[in-house]
Length: 64
Image (cartoon, rainbow, N blue to C red; front, top):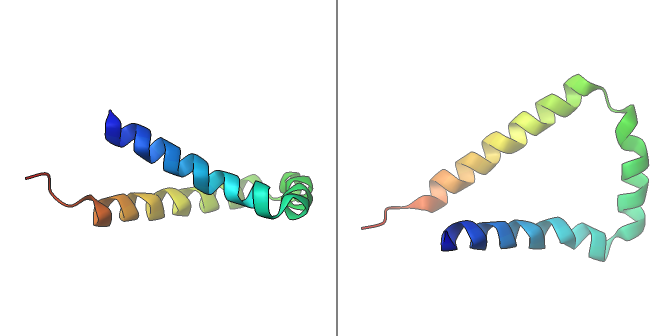
């Protein structure tokens, strides 16, 4: 559970960085999101999930 909470906290830190550093650009991007086709969003989401799984796999190691 500790590892899960650490990963969740780290995700929240990375998610918050653009809002803190570039709020105007985030607002501009948010206005453009509805114009992106659903298929494109699905492809982007799929590749982001696969990249995340790869990072978790490579950074996992063993718990000996």
